[in-house]
Image 1 (cartoon, rainbow, N blue to C red):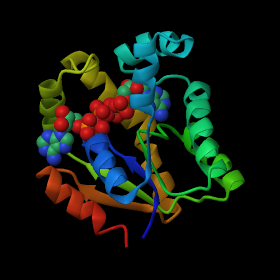
Image 2: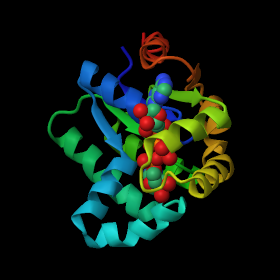
Image 3: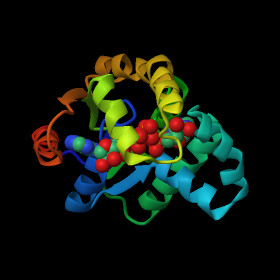
Length: 186
Ligand code: AP5
């Protein structure tokens, strides 16, 4: 079974929902950069203070900051004997993808599958407005979607060209979508 995975997709596609469940079922390290950043904000750390306003605007936190978070987690897991992982919301642009590639080469842990979760904007926006997180108001959601299209969507081609990308229709029940993803894992 494939066990080094990343989830790509627009805000509200259900990456976090699916990643949490799959990681628990398959004993994978779930690395959500959004969750890790929100934990830093809640703790009031220097890193959290740097990230908070950027996240509230729906823009991307600096690559260096996010990379440091991911590197420390993946290195710690490799040092403690390895195992699978699921990256959720990272990488978010080509620079992050290139840096991740270098890190994974160092760790000799290549990505096995990039899952693209696809969903119409109207459904995404309704889902996020229903959730009501600090960055879930309509203006910020629309900006997050723009940032996704401009900076993150180019990763679709990037992972397609490496033969790693599989797309999943992300409309339907949580269970139905989980079955679609599981079918890709081999
Ligand atoms: P992040 O936390 O990654 O947010 P996001 O990508 O905008 O994704 P969301 O959490 O909004 O959506 P999701 O696809 O995970 O869907 P979810 O499962 O939650 O990033 C937040 C911010 O942090 C960024 O804007 C940026 O500032 C910063 N950041 C994070 N990573 C970064 C990086 N790598 N580089 C730089 N900056 C970074 O579901 C959404 C809702 O829909 C929930 O209410 C859920 O219950 C519901 N739902 C899920 N599935 C279904 C379903 N099948 N049917 C109905 N409802 C559903």
